[in-house]
Length: 512
Image (cartoon, rainbow, N blue to C red; front, side, top):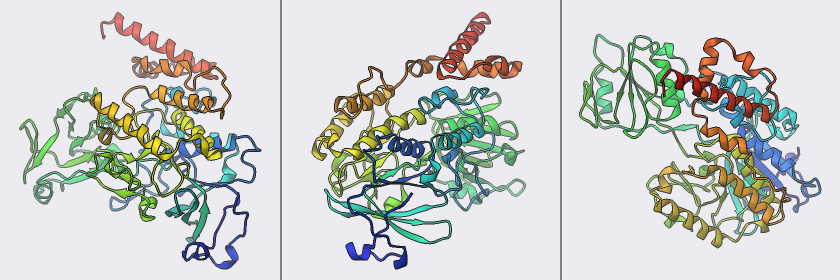
């Protein structure tokens, strides 16, 4: 698709690296939208724009910039394994399987292919995204191997364009102008690496008769064989830390897992659970309960990721303030405290005073939710707000709404600046409300249906599902269960039957 390229030196004093022959003259009233990232969020956003009525998006230029070689986001494996001195393309490791049943992870109306395992390996998820892009003819809008280097707004609170600097596959830097920017690049890129008191002394004093002590974030983790005969401490309470622990313990000489007191340890034998780290000495790791581990020689940090968007920081559109925990910066511009990006309307639209309220959107910031359906709900909301800016109230009203939401969270014991983009309860209601709002304002017809299907709401209650599928795999009866499973309704029925089957078995043997 064509992309508007501007002579920024003429309109804003910006010097373009493009030669004059690359500058195109186009109708300045044409709407141009840039999406960054071809993972789950970016593909949902692109399809939602293309799903708008043709007369609505007539003349629009829509482009998606993806810095990697294909679609799929973090589900696309490394092209070349990264050294520990450089950031990997993805945190994906070869033995990764989904921790959610795949029916709940789908884009609405686009189920996984028949015979897909209920909890498949990452290859299935990667292929699913590629199939989605090809099925809906999205690839012609996607520019692979195009990296967004910076983005800055040129204009004022009511009018202007984004000057987006993109490096193409040949290394050329292009200055492209877009009216709207949608950031959909995910949030699992820049590792959060905590610094513990005394850790440098511990690292410097490796025993002479043992391996060199190391600390490594899980973003670099790939195979458990790397830790054969090592004594490993995994730090973190999230899904990645638990998964890494369950793998490393198969090869390590000894495995420790440091978790918060209020989090559940993984169900893995031969793993020694420890509380949070207090500090290091030259010989030991000391925990908050006073206990000590002296034999660990490798620490894997499953401590999550920092909420950073480098190209917006480079363009001076996003300030990094790790200490920010109040709304005092609301009127200064967009801020990240590395956990929470604010001020945003509905975790989506930037409320910075520098540009219109529909000029900058974020898809996929929400945590602890199935990405594809959530991303779709957000994307439909963004697509219609881009088409019709009047759907959004004015900035002051939206800021007041946000303040009220944050006040409500605090009244329930949640600090929004700590939990970030996590909805403690009502994540399905959140998606439904986005659709309801569009219906109420005439952007969507009232079809009498909620956005979230009933079976998706039912699925979190299937507490025996993962254990049931593990037993199915142990018995080798996967094909019997998956036979004839094609539609979303089929998948929903499979989950119900499997959960009931496993629940009955566990009750019969007194396991629950």
